[in-house]
Structures are given as C-alpha cells and as structure tokens.
Image (tube, rainbow, N blue to C red; front, side, top):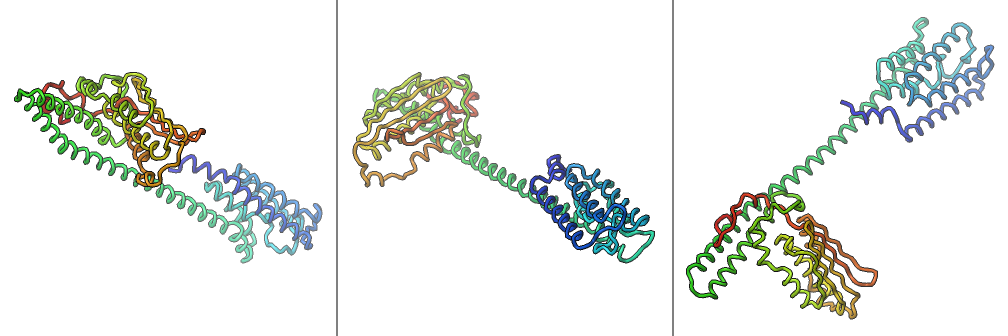
Amino acid sequence: MTSRSALARDRHPGRAGYAVLFTIIAAHACLQVLLYAGAQRTSGALGPAAELVFNLVVDGLLLLMPSRPRTVGVLVVLGAAIAQAAALAAPGLLTATGALFAGPVPLATPVAVWILVYLRPTPMAFACVGALALLNVQPWAPTWSGLYVGVVYAVLPAVIAMYVRARARLLGSLRERVEIAERERHLLNERAIAAERRHLAAEMHDVVTHHVTEIVLHAGALRTSTEDEAVKAAARRIGDLGSRTMVELRDLLGVMRSGERATPARGTDDRDDSRTAARSTDDRGGDLAELTATAGASLRVGGDPGTASPVISRAAYRVVQEALTNVRKHAPGARATVDLQYRPEAVSIEIRNTAPTAPADPSLVASGSRAGLAGLRRRVDLLGGTLRSGPTEQGGYLVTASLPASVPAEDRRERPAPSDPPPPRALA
C-alpha cells in the first residue's frame, strides 16, 4: 500500500520539479516565438499571431498542472478539440497552413500528457490521453502522418511517463528495503550482543559465585571452630568481604543481563538488609579520605554515603582515583579539590585542579595507557551515569560525574534474609 507521504511526494514535485517544468515550458515558448518569427503565421480572422497566442496560453496552463492536473488535462483536450474544429471549419484560423509541426493541436501536448500520466495515472488521465490521440490521428480522415503524430504526441509520452513513474517507485521501494534490512541487521547485532552478555553473566554466576560462596562458608566454619580471636576476626573479615562481593556481583550481573544502561532505582524497597550490612562494613569515605590525603587534595563530602550501593561507591572511588592520578602525572604542583555529594537518587562527583606550577615529567606521562578516562566513561555509562572532563578557563582541569544511587539487581527480592555465617543464598 502506498503511504500518504509517498502520494504527497508524487503530487507535489517540489522546487526541483517546478524548475524543470518551468524550463521545459520556457523552451516551448521560445520555440513557438521562433516559429512565428520564421513566418509560421495564421491567415484567419483572428490575425497572424493566433496560433502563437493559443500555444502560449496552453503553456501557461501547464504551470498549474502539478496542483490541478485533471483540470488542466481537460482544458488541454478542450483546446485541442477547438483547434481541430477550427481546422475543419476555417483552415488557417488557429493553425498556420504548411506548418512545420503537423496536426492542429497545441505544441506542448506531449508535455501535458507526460505530466498528467506521471502525477495521476487514473482512468480519467488515460481518457484524456486517448482523446488527444484521436484528435491527432483524425480518424475521419486517416493518414499515416496523422497516425505518427498521434503516437508521438500522445501515446509515446504516456508510456514514457508510466515507465519513469514505475522506475521511481521501484527505486524508492528498494531504498526502503535497504533501510529496513539495515535496521534489522542492527537489531540482530544488538540481540547477539545481549545474548553474549547473558552468556557471560551465566558463566560468572556458575563459576565465580560458586567459589566465592565456598570461601564464605569455609570462613564461617573456621570462625565457629577456632578459639583464637585473631583467627575469628580474620574469618569474620573474610565472610564480610565475601558477602559484599556477592552483593556487588549480583548488581553487575543484573546490568549485564539487561544489556542496557542501568536505570536508577526509584525508592529503597529493593535495598535489603544484606546491602545495608554490606554498606556498614564498606566505609568508602575512609578510603577516599586516605586517597585524597595521599594525593595532597582536599575532600568535601555531603549527604549520607550509605545511600549509595557498593557498586556505585566503588565506581565513585575509581573516578576520584583516576582523576587524582592524572593530576599527579600531568599537573605537578597543582592543588586539587574533590567534592562528593550523596543524594537519595544520585551521587555527584567533581574533581577540580588548578594550573600546574611545573612542567610534567615526560617519562611519567608516557607511562600511562591514555585510556583511563575513556574506560571510566564506559563504566559510568554502563551504570546509567554520565562523566565529563575538560580544561578550565584558569588553566586547570575539571572532571565531573553523576551516578545513580543504585543499580537494579534482578533477583535480590527473591533472596532470604542473611545469616551468620552466610548461607548458599549468596549464589544469586
């Protein structure tokens, strides 16, 4: 089925189509003026320029053909009938005797037929073409020249118009099929990537979570079977680390299974007791304080760090770590400030440094992979956040990141409450 947009394009040729039409009509008008100047003039009561005026009027009507093709087609047929009747009743009235172009029809008849059939290949259009062909053939006085004029002036332009229209529609259909095939190829590629993500997530689930669970269980058994307080503390630490690792791993598996950018969690109903326990032992703020102090940067933290999930806290830590590493490499002597703001729905990070006071060490700069920020940007984007970086007007550098407070874990709600030591529910 032809779409409405395709019909609109057919009915309105546009500026290029109007330019071509105007050029053809102007060429016809110039030809008629040249014929008139070459002594092709009428000898009837309407004067020597009757044929010239008649053809120029038909040329003017062709300008309305794209907007009103059927009306103009009927008028052209009526004009040809009037010219034919005048040739029979009063020769020389509208057609010069001994004209170079045989047949008492408008000179622009082929153009009118072509436009009419191309824009409106309807029964009415073909009826107009048949009427013009009959007026040119003159069946009341048939001749070979009349048959030739009828074919050239009416039938041939109609056939060419139908061929051009069919070819244009075929090319449009092929172009549309290519676009559809390209979209399908893109969708298949996306499905293959999603399937590979799910396969990788399944491998991680089957292998990594199994071994981590065994570690947690053995740590719990060691804690209950020993009397040494140092060994108990170490076992407790191992169990806590294993539990947090499982929580983070479930978050990452949820992102990989979805195959899409993570969306921020709307609310706190998906944050169970196991995540809260993980946060309580994962004091990322202390790590950041140690990191910024080592780098000689100032740290400002706003909000409650407990609102961020372990995966988000770790990503924020990596952003700050990479930014401060770049400051030490590329901006010796610069002062850096780190600003973290924890909100219920998002975590915002800003690392800003002043202009360097000394040139960078070339060997130190060359030791990097030059892909740190790019890798962080991919990681932040996968978690549903954004990361931007660039120089400041004062000659320093600015790195900003925004992360959701948590990422969805597909199966967290199906887990039982944690116990001590952790049960096999940590298998996700």
